[in-house]
Amino acid sequence: MKKQSLHRQYNFPDADLYVQCQERIRYAKRDLVFFEQYGFSVDRLKGFVALCDKFRKLPDDDELIGDQMVTTEKKYTASEKLKTAIRSIMTRVAMKYGNRSGRYRKFGTAKLGDMTDAQLLFCGRRVIRVARQQIDFLADVGVNENVIKKVSDASSAFETALNIQQDRVADRDIAVERRIEQGNKLYQELIVLCNIGKDIWAEKDPVKYENYTIYESNNEQKKISKEKQLKDAQNAE
Image 1: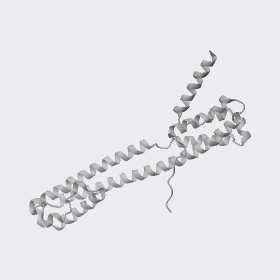
Image 2: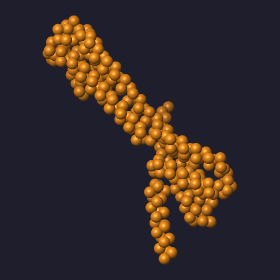
Image 3: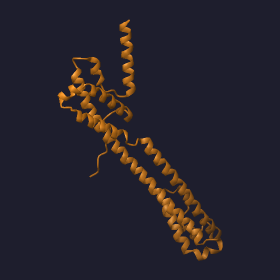
Image 4: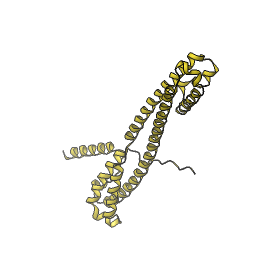
């Protein structure tokens, strides 16, 4: 059974989630005596802090994409070296038989520039195999084991680069899923903490009640706070 993909339960960046959690942790420490009346103990608060630290240490998507891009560039370089090695043989084959002959076509390099990674890898192996089959006939145009070995080495290097690049793609998928999973756990605990905080101060202190209001983004929180400060200043005049 295919595993269902995870979805974020919050509509703001991970960085904002972390900042909001840190702010609410400070408020909860201030109000801990009240939180304990709801069964939200100091140990649970410490667990929330640990969850925040764990979330902060996870690699973000920019890091993962950067790693993926580096391996993709290396794969591209390896593919170009393989194509160059293949063309070196095919130039010799064309000199011997022409590029419209059956012997030339047997190498299967007609669309070398348009091949997918998998097609290129198979093409390299085919060129090695066919070149060795015809090595005696192509010796006079310079096809020998050294020339074939260049294709063989380039094919191995390309396969390694391709596997590493695919591993990085998979690593990113796993890391993104892990980050969403951890972020959702953090958000759920944040909701619990904020609901308790709001219940504590609902009829006692509107400012402290506001401390536990979750905003869609940290910028929104700053904007509302600034507007409130401006309004308070105007009322004081």
